[in-house]
Image (cartoon, rainbow, N blue to C red):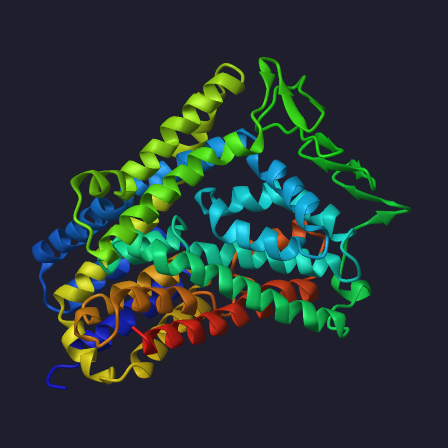
Length: 483
């Protein structure tokens, strides 16, 4: 190694980012920018070139995924306003029964519902999951909590349109359709296998309700925030679910009344589930069609245009607006868009500065230095990719930030590895899931919303999602052997 300085300064920059986030409580976006600036200056790029590289890295990544993030978040916000989640859970329960509910619930959250911002998705589904946990037998709360943790976190890192998956695809220059084609089934299989193993542990006494649960129970009712949930009704954000009917603030006026399985607004009944989910399903079908056409070598201008991810999400969003315009009260679409813009803003900034760090890492020549650390074989590169992301996550505590940072380090060397780029991206996403703990917002949300103790949350979140991280790596490695 002729000049190890870039490697040393990169290590210092990453360590400084971690310290700024955890100790100084600096916003992750600002910490990543400062780390990128330090790396450029310390490595000899000079002030002018460093700033140009930081700006270019931000802009290049925004050009790749910025519009996709905004469209995806807006689409998810409208789905929330239409009450699609509660109706979907009700359908899953009625169709598959209580025993299969955790699996279908988790896979749906980790794939189809990833357009909804993670915190919003957790807050909306937690009351339903908490109530349904009492209906699926012993250890029901543990299984539903694990299902939510797996659905949210695995989906973010591996499944388009999860934020982490979008960022990884952009940083490693992977067509979004290809990321969807590989990541979607990987997320579903990983969630299923992990939840099967966790359920087996629960059946063998791994879960202790007396020590792992903290919800206040009075008789047959669970009291949460002043709302009472009995066996026939679920309190949800000030609304009541009875007999499959849902009323909630996100989709109804103050005077909304749930009747006959529908959310009734001042302007009429909410659309049925099929119509509510059609915009999202249409977007995913269009993107997947473009991916299949690319893999098959089918060169058609029409398919290429309609299968473009931006066109797919835009088409879905337009259709969602038409459905919402007909079914929601006046002004609801504007309110949903306002919330969507506020949510997407913070995501865009964090994702963009991850691109800035990646650009500086490439500019200082780190790729040439660490290229030799990856063997020409298949296993070592993927294992090292996973390890880098896992270590970053244990230090930083954010799935998205650690995945973006790992991808930024790996982007310069990805073309030289004897591995498909999409597998490198998925390995980074899988590694970023390892050891979710007390620095994660998801950890505390799931503890509070589902009535778990810290001990219980370590089981349903930390252990379970870490298991998913390892299982995903094994699946990715297996896929690499046949590709």
